[in-house]
Image (tube, rainbow, N blue to C red; front, side):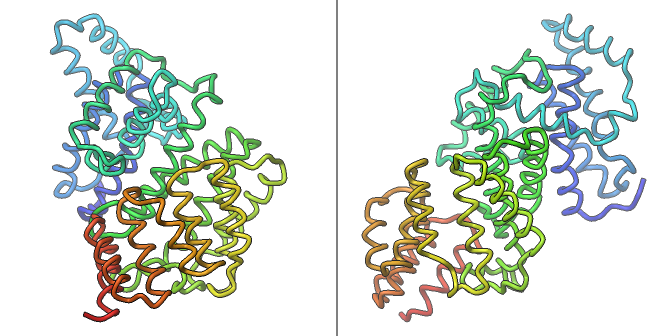
Length: 405
């Protein structure tokens, strides 16, 4: 045993290992649902023991061993599944936990990712299950992201787990069918890590880091796929600003006020190279276009030098590919930067009732630029009342307060 790194460090360690442990169990025994229950029990055991006893030298091996015991115990206790129990016990006796199992297996996590995105599942179920099993998000967090009640999301995840029970674990042959759902899921995991939907911290770095790691893995497997490269570029170019997004007390710092010297130049260089190569191969997909926008922001030496005309042109391309509310909101910002705040406000009018607090936050900014301070203050307050993120709430209320009573 080695000394514990503190409660927060242990929580981060468990979150990082959980999908790898689940992947190892499903690979060895099958039974996705039962395996996830066993992993959760092992995680609870670790959370209870490690703070006082210390973190094992091989935490992943410890978790696999405990989860394997819990899984075989559960199978033995279920008389209706005696045949499965005998198979699992036989597997355990023939193939004890080995050095290979104890070493990190990226393939297990990737195989788990594709299993969760099985084509027999509808896209919402694919994404929810992957966020739960691979991304480590709680059911409540996923429900907030989809704006549905938590019991509804719990049922969706439960049905998805039941659907993939018995599916062969391993790298699938039909990657093209599953790839859009996989990329969208990774994008959602990254976004939750980059800007948390709730809580006291603006960012959940373990999630954005895991999304980048998994996307790198997919890119290594599909190096010629332009959208995989585009998504990885988008993540790197966005994550490059991470250190400058918060102030000394965790407060939100908007893009145009960030200290660009704190941006990660190596990540920007890698992201620009990735998206440049992907766009040269053509045709451009949505992730490549988003990455191109991020590159224009990152390459500007200061906010005033941002090429908003080119960004607006890219958003025109993007909304033809993906005419969603997020894309239209971002285009409205670009319109405002090129044609003035009232032009942007006109674009916002069609987004009433969509995207939670974001349209009101943008509306407040544009009204403030236009000199309509009373209306801007009301928009900021409205946005602050809708977000569950405390840093965003504080930022929006500070913007409102500086406009006067």
